[in-house]
Figure (tube, rainbow, N blue to C red):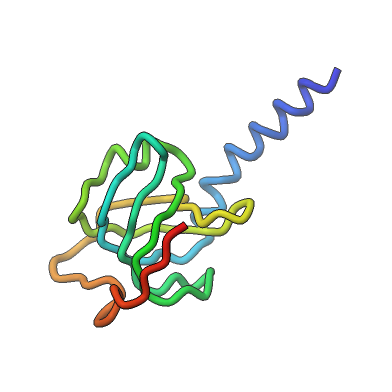
Length: 115
């Protein structure tokens, strides 16, 4: 029976996801919208180095719905993201430290990209 092999693979994926997030660079952002029902978050973000993505505002999936429990529109956050199965996905999310952080700098809203 292949069920134990499948369960083992799924357990490995669940363990590996936080480890992968630790290896990714943190990006800064402002939360624009939280869509907990659909597991999505809209971020006005700075550069995301591992994705070669410039500052913009866009919608991301989240790797786990509980990530959205800790944020609301207007919050400044630091996050990791990657492309998983063709979808831009936030893997980790935490409050940003320090006042006056401006993710993306000037012109970040000029490039709006939604998925």
